[in-house]
Length: 115
Length: 109
Image (tube, rainbow over all chains, first blue to last red; front, side, top):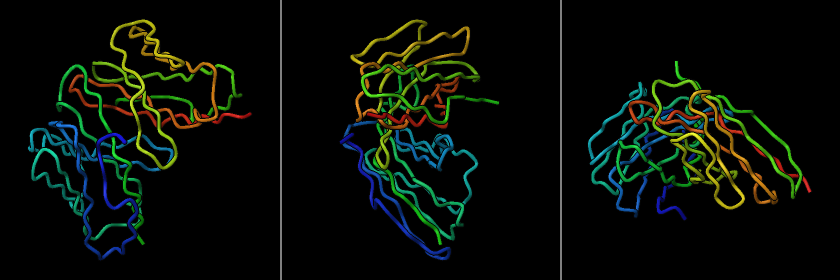
């Protein structure tokens, strides 16, 4: 247990569906992250929130929409996804969004399959 | 562009020693991380290096040479549970983590 939980763990959705991924951290951290992990590829940073404000958006398609209502919760809203969006989506948190030492704690991920 | 290189897969024998290399080219440097990720699980933090040299932590050690853009993770007395992917990540000048694709380590009895 890393102190970061994600639900659901597995999700299968059609291209026209709308779904949301949820992440919760119990570590008192101020920064939260969404990553996409595809097989044999580096982790792709999607979004960063620091103190509930979005500080990073790495050219992610608009069909992915993040929401951070407070420093403990992070959502990723999904709409009209494509099959190539199938991947493991990881949430992480850290004490601060920036700093010389920024160990990130990861959740177990949501395995997303888009049909 | 920014780039992190590490071998895709390595195989080692239980009880032996293995060294996983990582080379990087990034915009600035604010430290290098190693993470372990078992299949289907979250990556977990192993080590952080910001100064040149060797950091030892039990069976695992991590080395950094900033002038060469090079790091390695050394695993001693390998156990079957060490079978996992090992991810190298560098924090660039914007304090953003740049990740390698990971090295899948297979331990054989």
